[in-house]
Image (cartoon, rainbow, N blue to C red; front, side, top):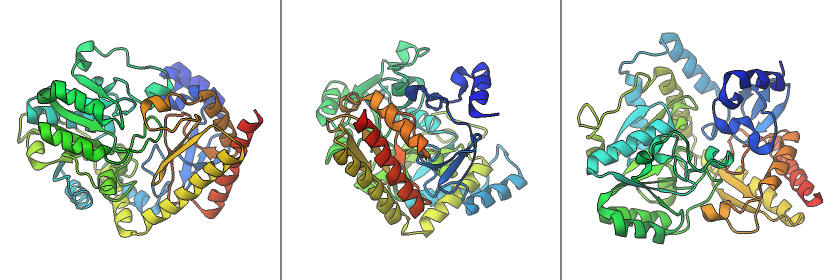
Length: 428
């Protein structure tokens, strides 16, 4: 069966034919390719197409797909048993590795997804502070738990859904919205609600409305304000964790949060996540404290083995982040060169191996700037990139992820594809 045939069948069985909204390709008016396998920097669909992959399972495949060391660790673990619902030494070893890389994670709890990690971190912050309110930012996505589906980014933006149906208003009444890169908007909320705010959660690099870097002083400003009011500062590093640096965005920018959430990278791309932070906050978690959180698959031995193998590779290769920077800078240059060459109204934002091109003539520093993007132009660009064997996110509001497995041939092919895609916009 080809992708179209599979998709037709899938639409009978799943909402929109997919298990996560952005995969439906509605924003670009196409049928999604159904993937058969992936290897190193490439991904292969059931139609026989081979692509250079810049999605990387939405971020965790920093080293490329199916690394031998990770696959071997998964097989070895699976032979011993796929799930115990009981503690293992592997969990302890992985937790120690994470704390060595990210010292602010004094204690942590393993869970199964970024959504679960964020939901649990916020519950812990509320339990620790005895307060109810939280602050989030327009366009920042922190998973699909009820209280955070307010002006969220990523899939909600792609589907043009500002909030989600099925979420009672009472669940979001304690969620306050600030503007990313606007400290004054944060200060106004704290002036009014400061003694009631349990936590402020932020993507240190906004990457679910496209990549929007923090302006100088923004993250430190958040640290200063939250410390003044005794509010828990949470960095959502589901995307930036172990990607911008071994110590995540907090190491990259030199700002230390009270709590951090990591996503599928800690499972080597498998269903796993972690939340944690200061010991006195995490001591509030059951069974040592009154904040309840549990899960049969938390610390799953197969996911733990994959994550441990992945982190060992990152920790053992001190040059990996230099290579990622070189490859990413080269791709950024290809975008900028083509934008100038074909007089395209576009902006290119990049932080390390994360980047986005926005089809607007306005510098993109906020959610409002993102919303000026020409989505029709993006769709045209996407179609040409796909035709030139580039596997990129089918949404203006997702990041372009660079991986270390990219070869010189891949990079040259990417440069040609970018030039072709932007030249078509010029012709249009």
